[in-house]
Length: 301
Image (tube, rainbow, N blue to C red):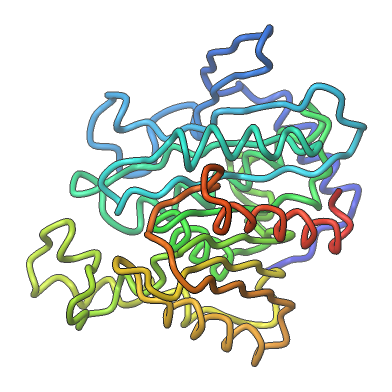
C-alpha cells in the first residue's frame, strides 16, 4: 500500500468535501445529524429500505476546541438488532461531555445481511469520519471506536483489518485510512465466529445459519488479525458473564500483549451482560471512570 504524503491527504480531504455529500437529516438546535455511509446504495444492498442503509448519527460537543478527538460508538444486539439507546445515545452523550464528537453507527444486520456487510460498514464509517474531519473540527489522526457485545466484535474486526486506504479509488472517501487511534471493547462477543460454542451462543446459532456455511465465518475472528499495528485497547468484562465468556477477553488481552500493543483489561467479579454504562450500579458503574482515566493517559482529553 502506498504511503500518502501530508499534501496528498489534504488534497483528498478537499476532494471529499467537494464530492456530493451523503443524504443527511439534522437538528441544529440539538447538534445532531445523521449521514449515510454511501451516497448511493451500500455494497451488496438488497433494497432501499431503512434496514439497507447504514448510517452515522453525529453528536457534537458544545464547546470543543479545534482538532478535538472523535469516537465511533457501535451498539450491540447479537447482529440481529441494535441497543441504540443505552449502548449508543447514552454513550455518545458521555463522550460529548468530555469534548469528543461521537458518531453512533447503524450497521446492517442479519439474517438479511451477513458478514462481511457489517465489517464493510464499520470500515467505511472510519473513512467517512476522517473525510468529515474539517467539517466537524476533529483531528483525523485521533479517531477511535467503542463497541458493546456484538459491536465489540465488530470494533475488534475493524481495528484488526484496517488499512491505509486505496489511493486509486474512484470514491474519495475510500482513499482515506481506516486506521484507529484507540479502541474500547465492552463485554465484547469475540468468540462469535467459533464453530464449537458448548453452552455459549455463536453467530451461526443466533442467526440460524446452516452448519455447512458456518466455516466461512471463521475468518472473521479478531484474534487472527492482532498485530503490532492494532491500536491501544481498553477492555471491560465481568467474570460471570453468562452470555459471552470472559475468556474471550482475556485471550484477546494476551494476544495484544504478545504483539506489544498497549492494553488495559478490567474484569469485574460479577455482573450481567449488556449493562451499558451501568449508571445505576454502584460497582459496575465505575468502569466508565476507569475509561476516562485511560483516555486521559493517551492524551485524548
